[in-house]
Every structure is written in structure tokens, then in C-alpha cells.
Image (cartoon, rainbow, N blue to C red; front, side, top):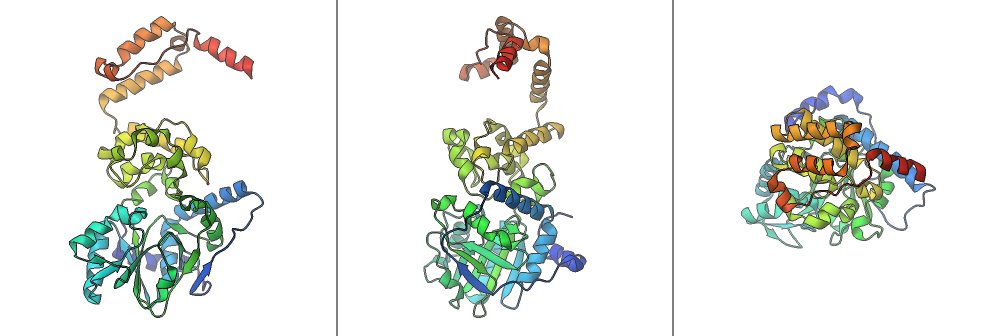
Length: 388
């Protein structure tokens, strides 16, 4: 059922799934919440249950998106389904033309992953649209869609002023298909877990459902994320909160920086998602950049099994024939060696000879080969057991 997101697809889907959508009136149209975060008795357990809720949402993503659209849409709210950034730009051009837009208020353009992913600044420049604090229309990023109440959850970032949401201006919201929760009761937990990028400070939380004096447009963007839905092992990567903790502890990112990724997405999760969000041919090498050290999992607020997903990604590449013949041979040889007790118990001299044959001379020119222990594998294993 998963396919590229477009208006025709979801029109048909809504008709089919109508009876599965429960009616939910939800709270008031517009409310804010600010102050000290609630204290949970066991934050680790709470985070685990929150992750389960997110996974349940992703597993039923088509139904939850349809439920959100039904609850959110009204005479003041319009939803646009966009398969990629070209769909977004085509619809924006129509809005700009119909409303004679000459300027846009665009807060946090450099801080927002969605704005950078879409290249909003470059599009506006091509259309000769000015960036102004009092622009004709206002752009916002919707941090989460709340399916059960049909509302947008917005967390206050540095320059956003949510009093502007009801100031008679046209509001245009942007989000992606994975930014959705099936249960709005978890909003405060999300608020706490997502505060890392703001220095740990509690952010103002806004539930926006509608505003009678404003036209509101919401763009729900796929941009290849449905490619991840087709894979059961990697699907849970879409539950990532994008808090940035893993990026700050990743030794690969700290060593090579962001430039080699050549993308807005970097760090541990990008090792899993980039080949699917972009192209497998261009980014399959990034799957092997991870050291599997596990630091990302230690700091992840919802304990995503990032290492397991990366290992699964490598296995998928191998099974699907995405690995070149020479590399497949080397991996098969490595597997035989690791599974052979006699080869693992070979002397240090024999291992050095085997390693010299295993890697090419070009490889050895720029890299230092590992130094082997004088003890055999059995001796090292026995020492390990005795130390326990």
C-alpha cells in the first residue's frame, strides 16, 4: 500500500479507510503550554513506552496520516501531500500567485532540517520573494502531527513568535510523513525528550488546530521516506526524534565532519537512512562508515537500536547484490576465517601473512594493518572467562 505521497493516492485511500477512522473532536483550537516539565517516576520506562507508541504509529502510518488529515482539515485548513520538493514548490507557486505574495517571514531557516532539506531559501530567491519579518505569509515547521486530535505540535525555537499564528496572516506549515504521533497524551514527553538542541531548556509548546481569521496550509512531505517503510528492520529509524544527541558523540562525525556526507543529514541515523532518502548507488558506502561503537545508543533518549539497524543495512546490501563482486568475495572469506577455530588459533606470524594477502598494496600504503596478539584465540578467551 505504501507509495509516493500524492493527493490522488490519499483521496482514494481516505475513501477506503473511512470506517477505520475514529471521530475525535479534540481540545480547543489553539492553546499553549509553558512551564516546568512534569516529573515522571521512571523516565527510562516512560521513554520506552513513548518509543513503543512511536513504533505503533509508524507501523500504521497510512491510517494515522489519514486520521490526522480528517481531523485537521476544515474551511480554514488545507493539506497538501508532496512526494518531493518539486511538488512543494509547484503548490507554493500557486499559493503565491493567488495571494500575490511578494515577501515571506521565514524564521530559523538555517536551524530547520526541513527548510534545509527542501532548499527553501534557494527557491524563494529564484521566485524573487523577499525574506521579511512582516512578510505577506509566514512559514512554520510543525514538529509533530497529532493524529487523534488533528492538531499540530510546535515547539518554540529561538526566533519564533507563536502569537503571529493568529495575526490575520496566511500560515504555511511544513512537516514530513514520519513526524506524527497517534496519541496526543504523549506530547509533553516528546517536549522533554526533544529539548536537547535548545540547551536542555523547556520550550514553549503549542497545539495549533485552526484559526478562524487565518488561512492555513500544511505540506506533508514524503521525499523518499516511504522507501524505509518497505523494510521492516529499518522502518523504526523513522521514529528518530532528531534531537542531535547521537551526532555529538559519534566518533566518525567528529573525525570527518559533515562535509563528506554532502547532505543535510549526518551522523549515525544518516548511516541508515541516507541511501534510501537519496540513492543507494550514491550513498551505500555511508552504511560502512559506522564503527559500531554504540555511543549513539547510550545517549539516545528512546534507545533506538542503531547498531542493529546498521548491521541489518549491510546485510540487506549483501543479499540484494549491491556489494561489488570483489568485496563480496572478501566478506565471504572474512566470514570463513571468523567461523574457523583453527584459523583464529593460528600463530601471530601466520595471521600477519594472511593479512598481507588479504589487503591490496594500495590499501596498505595509506592504512596501518592491525597488530595481532601473541596469544591464540583460545588463550585469550580463557583469560577472559577467568577474569569474570
